[in-house]
Image (cartoon, rainbow, N blue to C red; front, side):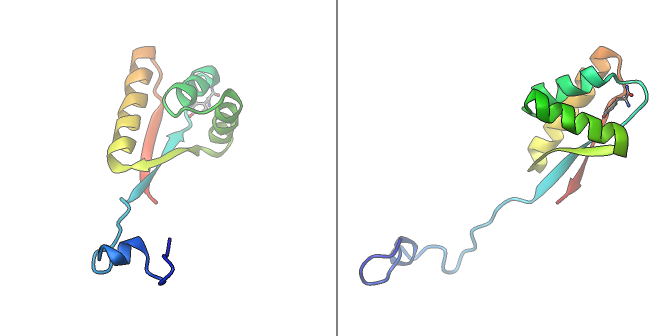
Length: 105
Ligand code: TYC
């Protein structure tokens, strides 16, 4: 917000003029289709790990089933890695080969 002299707070404090405001690189996390993981389990994963509603989780699962892969979420590198590890862990625990990958946005 500018004051009545047309000077914003950042300018007044002399920040950001010479220093970029940087946002971290983001990564798309995709679920991959396979012939063994049940549809119900994929919906469960999307609800519990990716915080999707049941309707959205079902939509994404059906998209993956039909198209081979589908977007589960977009995160920083560290969070994307944590999500992928969580998917692989819960899949292994449940005896499903569900795979998950990331791609830089
Ligand atoms: N293709 C699986 C089936 O027919 C369902 C499935 C959907 C599996 C999405 C993985 O990421 C996946 N049971």
